[in-house]
Amino acid sequence: MGQGQKKNKLLVPEANNAMNQFKYEMANEVGISNQIQGDYWGHLSSRDCGAVGGAMVRRMIQQYQQSVAGQQPQQPQTPTLR
Image (cartoon, rainbow, N blue to C red):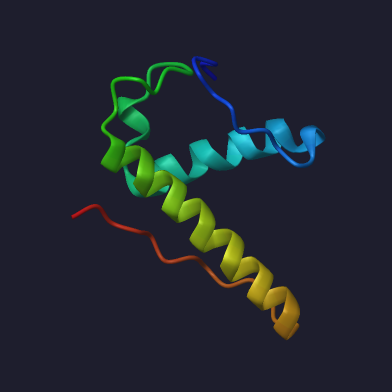
């Protein structure tokens, strides 16, 4: 992952690899994984990167709600870009 001016730090540094993998999984679901060149995301639009971040947040909220409700995880709905 490019470092650039990144100031965000993970609360659990040991989760770094898992979060990167999660990010690429969401990029694939959103449909922009073919635009990513290695670890470089700089040429992608803010909208595309935001779609990936939004998909990550939706999935994390869904998993948390299901764990609180004691349900089994369901197949996620694929987000679409407008």
